[in-house]
Picture 1 (cartoon, helix red, strand yellow):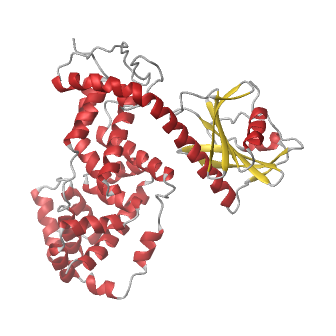
Picture 2 (picture 1 turned 90 degrees about the horizontal axis):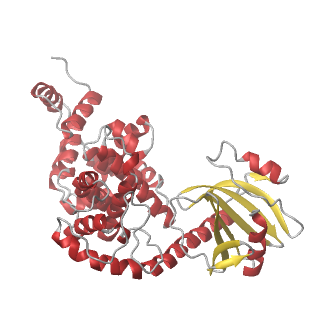
Picture 3 (picture 1 turned 120 degrees about the vertical axis):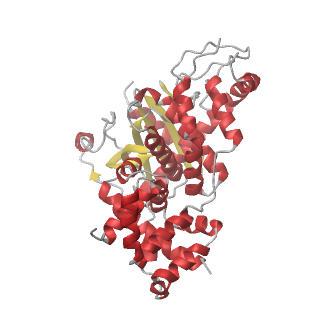
Length: 277
Length: 177
């Protein structure tokens, strides 16, 4: 039988790892290994890796996951409301109830009451956590723009130049109705990231302050349920942290995050100009 | 009457993979808290996307892909890049003793003696991407499946895996007495 090459032997070792080798293939592999120290070492690596300690899921994790199927809201964002209304992301219809649910899992019905209590309390907490997460991310992304060597990928000749530039670079059309004015100059745009997805980045300048606007698809982000900071007709979430002021809002399918070290009223003023209701 | 939750069968099927998912998450993060968070996040996203899963495709690789994406999201939030290629570059320019350590049977002997904790530690020294491909290969995924989970080309998987394993052999040889 023809001897295997090292490349072939490595392939066979991989197949062996998946338990795919027949007696004949094993024999051919052994023959190669007998004469090849390198490949023997590869096999020794496999043997070493097989000694990695087991890291199975702890029992409480399994229980939590199973429990979440009965009261799904415990694991995801809870609606802020008095009743225990499960989240709409669960594809099934679940009636709002404070009764413990009957189920084949005895322990699940015990924990359902606890889960419901958690939902109500978690609602408010989750809300502020979500704001924090998104606004913190906005500041991080703004910093990336500030410190990037070439943040501006397209210099602005006006919004009519900047917006079409994004075509083909993003899978959505960033809606933005503000071209800049004497106070807030649109200096350019770039493709960036917001949390985990691509965003259109618009860079404005107010006096010596850089103001970064991120426009991105809103879905799938943990939006805070309460957007309590009103700017004109916009309902936004607002925060100040690490010396930056941020404003976050949704408009249609898109999310907008505006960050700057300019004062909060200035940030609000720009936010108000960005989209036509 | 038991409430028909998110297709109990689907959730049950997902749960069958939870040990493997948790193990992968643990070896990626080396933190039981993060591993549990990742496993939980994967479960939640999988249930939420149940309708999009095609029943004739590979559930396991679909789940691992979700986990990897959740991991990348977590890394981005912590402002750490998963693409720390420099880790692998450091190994390439290793000291001259390397060739000594990797000489065939001497190495094999060392590999036999390296303890489980050190193997885990050596694995953790690799970059996130390198570590991922080694673990996925260990999990029994084919190169094509690994490419799907990692969201990269097949060729990239092959070269990444080869480099990662070579790097690992070097590290383990240093650990072993």
